[in-house]
Image (cartoon, rainbow over all chains, first blue to last red; front, side):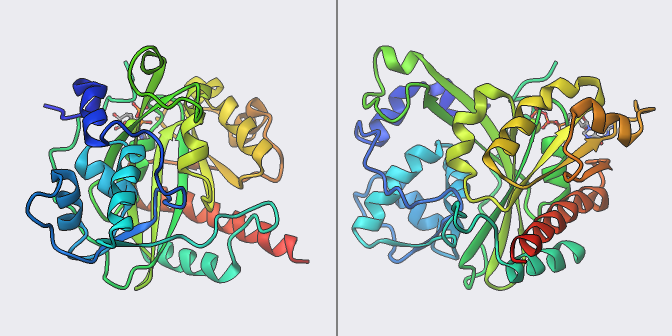
Length: 120
Length: 204
Ligand SMILES: Nc1nc2c(ncn2[C@@H]2O[C@H](COP(=O)(O)OP(=O)(O)OP(=O)(O)O)[C@@H](O)[C@H]2O)c(=O)[nH]1
Ligand SMILES: [Mg+2]
């Protein structure tokens, strides 16, 4: 059966985030890569411990953490902000999002993507 | 019948970490109406079994602080799936598939901002499902290509599809079979080439 939060309702999300729905680090993109900097510690909130295990053997994107925990990205962002604040994880952010001034990716990056796609 | 949850939730696939050296992630978005083949396309190109997640958002937006009570009842849930392609030791590309209808765009702005570009997947039996996505991408200046996912129904030429969609001549239109890796990959290549041509033009 699905362990989707949709079935569980908002109560679980409320508990997991200790009632917070704001205060997440706004720079955390869906594809920011997260690396664990410490082991899970006893007494830690289970979702925090789970994230540290997940990101302990290599970087993991925010959205992948969300899929594996079956929690919305918005909630994972709040959990990750706790871990970032306490130095238990670090974040590798995507290059600055394209803006009106620089709307598109660099030719080097595009070339790299094309080569990889051709080799797929 | 199609719905955003037509895919049964994958039994928990173990997380597959990225290379330790991975530091840079890119995104491409695949949008389209229900049942048009978004999940199929993502699966065809992904190196991991596609994952999915659900977002719940209140329409009222950022001003709403409490998740309980009346406001929560106005929330909308949307499922999307994604896969990934390792580009090299330091870079990885995420390909997201998500419904393109107007009521889901509140999610897009947040999750897919900064994407390299988008693929609008269309089914000639339900072309109107893609009108909103095309308008929106045009309006916000996100580079995109349109891919006609061929369900074998098509006696339509691509020219007919182009005019039915009232597509700008500058937007590439390709045909694909989302079930075939090579065909799905050609769609992504068409998009990246298109983005590249825009970059080159822009720098002249
Ligand atoms: N004949 C044919 N069938 C396809 C093709 N692409 C997808 N399908 C089938 O169409 C059905 C819907 O495809 P999905 O990939 O689930 O579509 P979707 O856009 O993710 O659907 P929702 O998430 O429910 O909106 C599946 O049964 C696919 O096997 C195609 O290119 N040709
Ligand atoms: Mg789908």
